[in-house]
Amino acid sequence: METLKVRIWRGDAAGGAFSAYEVPARENQTVLDVVSEIQREQEPALAYRFACRVGMCGSCAMEVNGRARWTCRTHVKRVAKPGEALTLRPLPHLPVIRDLATDMAPFFDKWARAKGSFQPKDAPDGAVPEDFAVVPPGSKPRREADAGIECIGCGVCYASCDVVGWNPDYLGPAALNRAWTLVNDVRDGARRARLDAVSGDAGCHSCHSTQSCTERCPKGLDPSSAIAGLKRSLFWDALLGRRG
Amino acid sequence: MADRRHPTYLAFLAHRLSGLALALFLPVHFWALGQALQGEAALEGFLRWTDHWLFKLAEWGLVVLLALHLAGGLRVMALEFLGWRARQKDMAAIGAGFALAVGLLFLLHVG
Image (cartoon, rainbow over all chains, first blue to last red; front, side):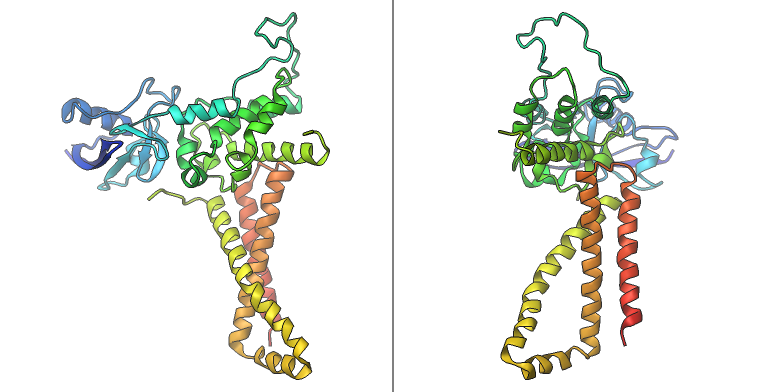
């Protein structure tokens, strides 16, 4: 049986190096299958993360041959030609816990910094509003919010973003995409504070529109356009004196 | 090495690098204009230089850089101000095509 050569980065926050493995090359195998096989058969101490195996949870993201991907939805034959090796690293731009497992805390902290939680306009103290909000599905804000709402927080866009690499404070595509869905949520009452939170050097204005986030998002979302939307809102609000 | 091979990243690089190159050109441009202050002869002396084929080549490069930067800037402004999210790759390709066409047009008129 043919074998597949796999190089896996092993180490922790202090540093590490690649280890080489070989597994049987199968007709149908995902990168996650390969990592699981290595962990079960050869390297029980290998640290990595996964849960659903079907592209719903977003926890198995790693860098596969230089590109951040969901390993569960990536077939080996799509990323490595026959005879070519797989090179696996933990997601870039995040602290490494061990081997292929990164600490996602900074990533989600930025969602909080971008005010990524819904602040109901009609019930500021967390009370249940008296009536349902009517949000027509065809309305522009609703369509803008719908375009970004399916993000599952896997961190692939964040790991693919050069600006995050250049400026560790930069909020990143996912947090800004989340902020944009809420800016477009007509039930939300925190627009002003949220736009303040996402502006400036660590916010949407740092984005260079290279669109790597949009290019790499496994869900086909478009964080780059969400960031452009935030820039646009801030521009018009500032120009028309709505920022006060 | 992270994999950045996708059209809009290339468009970003082209836009950024052409902008830097144009910024480097500006002092030369002002210096050349400044020659006029030294009198007609000084400017004429410099302008005779511009007939050299190497100068024409550099001029062609400049025209292509300007066209690239203009097209790249318009694309980013359309994305950011008009929210044109669709067909970004096509728009990047149109920008490259525009720069190429402008370059060819310039070559047609050199001589």
